[in-house]
Length: 269
Image (tube, rainbow, N blue to C red; front, side):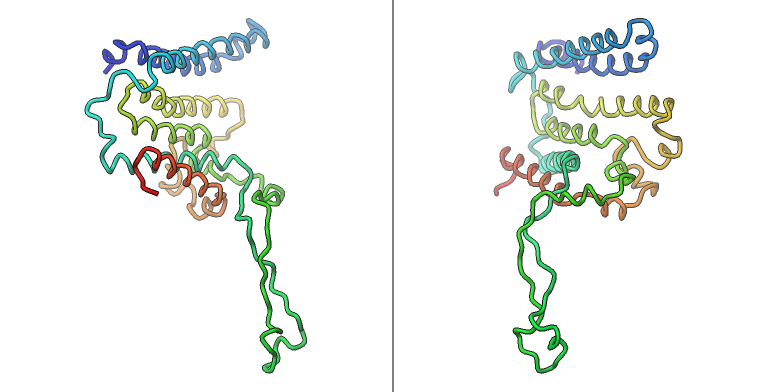
């Protein structure tokens, strides 16, 4: 596999870029205090930005110039099997549903008014007519539930019950689905590396935040880096997660995954 990666310009530049991006994020941020003391805050940020830009440029050059829908193919390619297709849809649905949680809470824009009665005095009268019975009326609502942000508990863990780094892993799961759906090694490297970055970068952030006091050991013990591990081991409750998830947002993410599956020809909608 390594020989195959290094033998093609696209795979080589993508792999070098991603490896450098992960390494510089871990090494430079791990030694932040030392580097800031030696260079100053402004020069540190400039050096960090230059290294990150160079790494991202390598990835972009490898894919856009040498790797878009071309390059070596993965052999054997299992993307045509039903199991892989279902896995791809599932990963992309999880990823998009997670990413949609970062948006304000969405709601179905049609609701019902509270029941009202045209004659309160006759409501319990056995001789009351149908016109006297409580009635419900449809009303239009704003698609964005602004009251949710005002009324929600700021200490809710929400997706952090799944993983301490929900944005990282949501993006990584979505791109992992893309990696499994393509036979091109260039695209697999481009979209497969984010899951590696999520694991390494997430673990590194945990260690740094624990040292700085942003995370407590109790918080680390009650949550997990790997998605769903805290839920599967009983450290977090599924019922709490279900109560805190923005379900309409998650449904929009699922719809997006289904539309992508339709575009690939997996579903006939």
